[in-house]
Length: 544
Image (cartoon, rainbow, N blue to C red; front, side, top):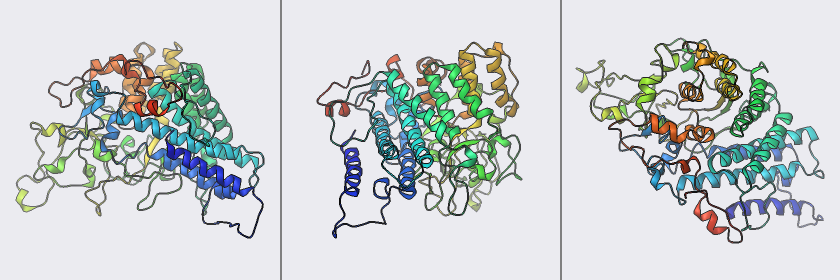
């Protein structure tokens, strides 16, 4: 919806037009620039499809605003901003009085989504052009399904965060200033249609694209990704029976299984099966991770097809700044260099898990540190436990998840994180199914689904009498803390205000949550979008 989207799409249109003009001695054929419009074959489609992953990844790697990732975690029921390390963009998400129609995070979310939608629309329109040759219809449908998956993903983010929004399904060929918000049902129908098409036309995970050497590119879109996203979408739409069916498509397909035994790069070292999934090098299916449904992959120094770009900040967000304590040195075993932009609250750290739950082991939530600097200056401390004292517990030795640990001895400062992102995994499939079953009144079935992941974690098994929506949301934290977008989960389920009010009020914590209200179940429509839309009314969400 910004002018550079229009410029990009206009370029696509011009290229299509030029390709249909009569040839002359001035015509040029450019074989170094690959777009569907210029090639009309598999190489062009491939180049444009990979561009969707690049665009998508920016939502996870916005390095020009390091507090961006905290927007989706602090001010919820699990975390607050680290002492002294709030960057700024996240401030309105714990001091909700400052969440206005000029909010930077809401604006970026809106712009990112429509940029991704614009890119997807361009690819969809070309793939569905019956006059375009160079590929079989099956392969064109496959690319079409890949683009539709990302369009649906973007619209699902918009629907969750803003409600009804303008629906755009064709490339824009000229500036448009008369957008209106479509009803939420219309947005939902488009998401459903796109994901059903994707599920039908994408390959399953064992038949994904291959590179030139024949290695499967598991990071590319496949039908199980569409099933999982559709399950979440149906839950937001309050269609639990359909959501359960999508979960069953993943569960009964036989392509995935929970990780229950040690594997991977540190299998011979202390740890447990749950922690193995998050060690650098263990995320991918090719690494032995049978639970990964969608992994956005990264390699150093270059990204790979279907991978991420940017400068990921997850380690710096979630990791403690232990190295600021005299006698402590940066170490791989301690997760590298974090700066504690957010801190898990006391409910998560001291009340959520029962004794023996693997997900709360020292390999998954680090609670203790030992002096490790071999410098003779600290010889008397070396190997002894660092005591908890004062504000150190808020930033320097605060308990933290180990899921984002990453260390490069050649880059100890570690501004960016070079580690794969696990975006969908099999454990969450059971959580989504349990939610769908609970919403249909099948509490015994929900308990059985939850017991699958609780059994893996050595947590006590439950019965249907234990299952409530709160219990399911608690279980999501136990299983997915540090992975899921917690804010969107609570917005999707309508539980943000209630759960934050009950669970995130640590006495003496920095950056206390204030002024949270029912209106915050949606974000404000960016004021700039409303002002630029001069020929129609783009209505604001209530209260903003």
